[in-house]
Length: 561
Image 1 (cartoon, rainbow, N blue to C red):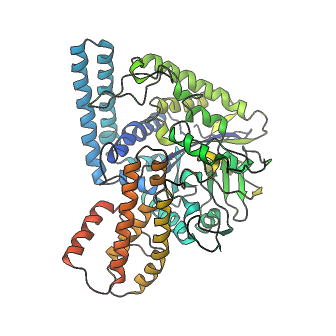
Image 2: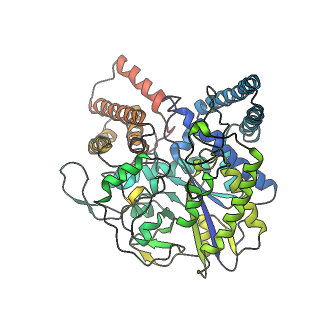
Image 3: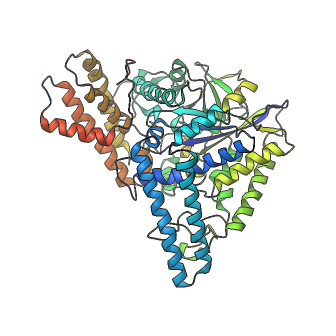
């Protein structure tokens, strides 16, 4: 088995963070459910396929995978299942049409690639309907039950926890995440993925917007401890101090400009001597944490210095329309899209093997000065397959080679690593994230501050309304459930992120505004003692059909609606 502990106690903890914002019922293309369909087809199902392949070969993957509650609920929805089948059929038809088009134009190499895409989507179609019975979440649950993977939970809608104005809001995001996890996986989660690896210790905190007095806050880790969660991850710079490059800078050029505008105001903390390859405990809560490794991280995150930028890998940005299939290779990071050369499947496969071999060679070099240690390699799951098409096969080969190579590095889940190398040193972590500059700039800046003003306004009104509502004998529980969901949706870190990265600014602004407006109207309805009118009931059913992302909501008082 791959997760086989060794006397040298040197481990690779490979962590994949899976998240798509709530897009069901909110558009299709270019922004909306196609994001979810692409992630399922290009990342989640290929990942499940390699887990299935490994299982049939008698190997456990030893991966740690986070699935956000909002992603779980979407993948489990009937709207996704039906829409995804239609999406795959469209891709199959596109491949057939492209084949005929390239036949007419005499482009034989592209004809061959069109046949490849036809076969590739047929395989995804079969995996979804036959192998996994149209149930992606149950498939992940199966691999957790067999010990192949460990699944972590996260905040309900990927809320950016350090900037929420109340500990109650932070706790509610965490509690809903734990509740959804237990519902789908039948056990309590051990690990928690901090959205954007964003952390804040406890101190006399003051909201960054508006005039308000400072007030004492619990640290995010203290709330995790109170909710019986065992571990989380942070970016390397939070442990060691100093400036971070961030993980998104290369993928989103707009961040270059944004961070430069704030660089002069940024002050790096002192370098701290902590070893990034050991687990630690937070002070004062005593929750275990591990820090992201930058060396292995760059190999997968970077299109310039890492594997995904190889000239023979599939080019992400150039597509053949109307079907949107990709037929060209990167060629050169500096080449114009018009100059991209056709993709060569066999050459790309050889590169995958070469890069997997290099990664396995690299691991002992990273820990060569350590008597024991853990390499925590953290990635967005969607990097493998969606952004880097060859990524899932690379991961499969890394796992295989680690199981077959005489190396003192073993792949183990986060809980397995912590069991073998228990943390024993308390560390007071500073505030920060894995965004550019290591702080909150990507999520709170002059382009996004209006969203936080709305979040703070809703937080201020929500908690008194909630307390009054649960005491009221006439309260329609539909209103309270939908209010919780609209608040969760407004708090999603995706809206400010999409604005800052300039990837879907209009869409994100519209979504944030919509959820705020709906929450405000729900608050006004809750505050009334009169019955709902026919028009108000119609409006309520409309937002119920569009925004009921959670089938059940765990209320802050512990009740479930």
